[in-house]
Amino acid sequence: MTDQQNSAPLSATLAFVEPPFGLEPTTAFTLTEVSGSAGLFSLRAEDQGGIRLFVLDAGQYLPDYTPELTDEQCDAIDVKAPEDVLLLVVANPGADGITVNQRAPIVVNVHTGAAAQVILESDAWPLRAELAARTA
Image 1: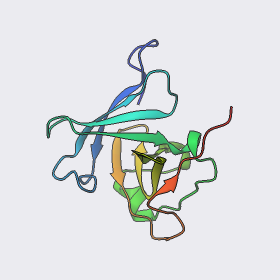
Image 2 (image 1 turned 180 degrees about the vertical axis):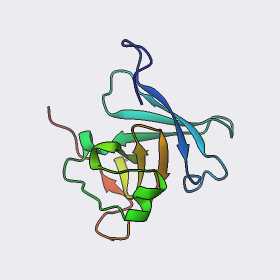
Image 3 (image 1 turned 120 degrees about the vertical axis):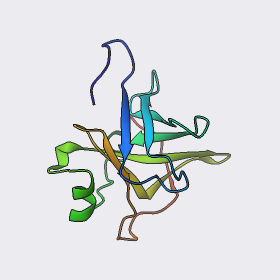
Image 4 (image 1 turned 90 degrees about the vertical axis):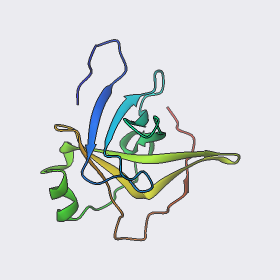
């Protein structure tokens, strides 16, 4: 996944190995960085009328978020090393602020665009964690 132009926001096509939960049967999505918001992306379905989710780069917004993936989850998208991964969490805006789903992250192979939304085996990560304000 690389920038298409230096001045344009990052945009990449993702191919999910299985449809993300609730978005069946779609497996093709476009991930586009939201201009002016580093680490915030729009994930848009390439069919289904353009369904869109907002996702955050967990590495930028959740520095203590360290989920463990199984070998099978890594093999599904051909991940060999931690640096092969972009870990995203779905953001849900609400009246009381923004929550993120830490229990079912989206794992992206940064080299191929292969992606999977996985359910973590550990219950240590919540479905709706409040997103704290980032400090610079």
